[in-house]
Image 1 (cartoon, rainbow, N blue to C red):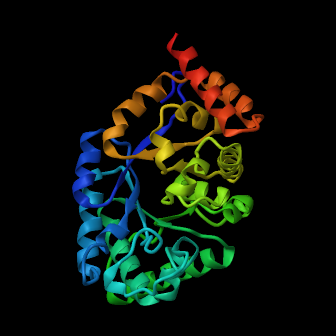
Image 2 (cartoon, one colour):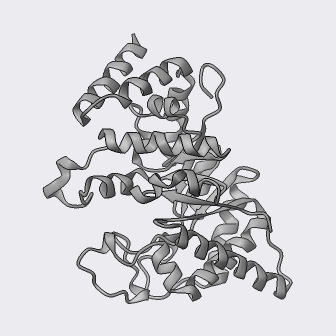
Length: 313
């Protein structure tokens, strides 16, 4: 909570149930991102429904009433899965990955969704789709969720019929249409890592263009502000779960943009909570106004550093 009483949820990014315990120990307000793809990686066989259900249930139970947002498998790009035998692509970040793979491999998607839905009765669980780029993809993914629900109902298996469904916002096309997407989901979560590379056409793993990949670029920050604005106009919350969420330089700016939730590694949560408690709403909004008018990443960084020094004075 800010110094003026605005509620900002500080949540954890996790990749397995053990990290949910760390999130609990760090007094996380919830799990903003359960990276389910880590259950699929570094192994020759794929996790079946029971294994996935066990992992999701354990995380949900560890967090009690606090929300656990489970992102469906974000596989591909920099996250290969040997058990899938995916073809080698010249540019995997622009290829068959994340929701695209899930929609193509409906068998895997249904299995995962069944596991998540089953776990939803053991805690406060939400579903989140990665790398949505079009309304057609979102509608297709939501339809498969309904199929998974119908299968569980036919089997007499309990699940939360009103489970929340959200989406990652990490592609410029989604940002542009965020006013429309906001009517289709229960929440947004901005993945700044991918949003930066897709906006600036700079591979975040390529050292040759590392200087071009920056969180300070005004185009990236304007997109974040737009998504938060469109989310609020439709009555839904917007989270940030990329690396920028844990950066103390950006946290006051995100408060000024109207971001509702920040999700980060459990170890960063205590310092983030301290930083948010020191934020004054009016000062953060004024900072956001100034940053929105800046022309370069260098100018943005200079402004954020100056604000930080001013707050410490």
